[in-house]
Length: 119
Image (cartoon, rainbow, N blue to C red; front, side, top):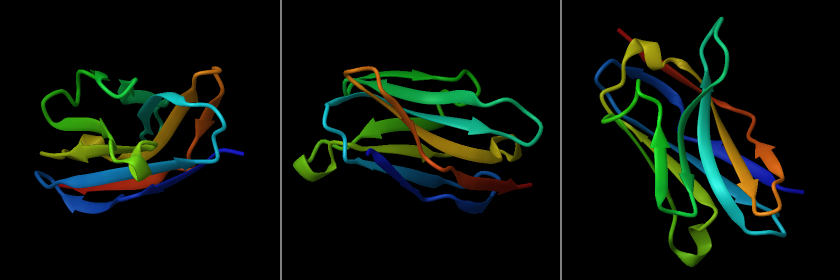
């Protein structure tokens, strides 16, 4: 059973930074895609950023230039995905979810981590 452990959420003032981490374990197949989604109060879940095969990245327009997604490249961190969030805005407030898809197409979700940006 794949487990995703998220960390790094919290409360920050507007203009500040946070770094989210998500470590995946237990997958018997290689993980091809890792992503971060978020759900703001009263909104639908949306894709924030994703990284495919370790180097191809996509970002929501609202976070381009401020957020950076990356994947660990050390042997013990290859299944860890990071989201560096800079210049945070109050509208970035949401629960952030880690998402991974292995090469068999199986998809897994983290339990979410709260990010709150105060104005």
